Length: 214
Image (tube, rainbow, N blue to C red):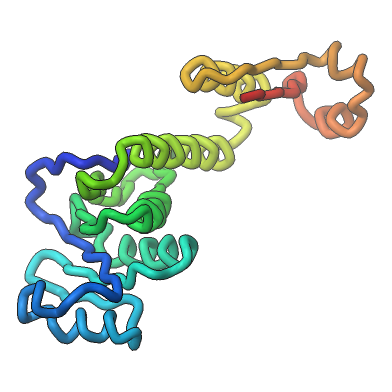
């Protein structure tokens, strides 16, 4: 699973993102970036990049809405996922976390049933040391939770029936410290959950109703 961290490891193929704000100056960057930086500062572009021999350098305007940054992160991911092992984001603002979220969630794959899966090479997103550790921990928890939910949705009932799903949620509750209550068929009947019971008539497995409280 992809992870967000602050300590970079030695990856052969890596790219980087610069978050540019209105206070940035072209002269503070390598001259080859000046045209892209100037366009970002002037507001004519919100996103630009340079393609190098085996990597990318991206420039992103910092003053954007969270969802706009997530979408740009998704676009960046699609450009690098086949060749890049790591990407660093230079910027101390919380917006670097929104970019990282867009990249990470787009990196999701469900390859369990493929005989010859083509796995994304991207495994690390590196953020600045100035980003709060709590923000990074929260982002990694979000990524893990979303991937878990997507895996559960994508897994067919032959491999994840109601009982197995309930057990998986109980295990997740123990790991993440939230309360889980699983209602079995007799309890469901006593509560007169007719809709759930009607749907379950088409299944050979008994129903469950899982309540998670945090």
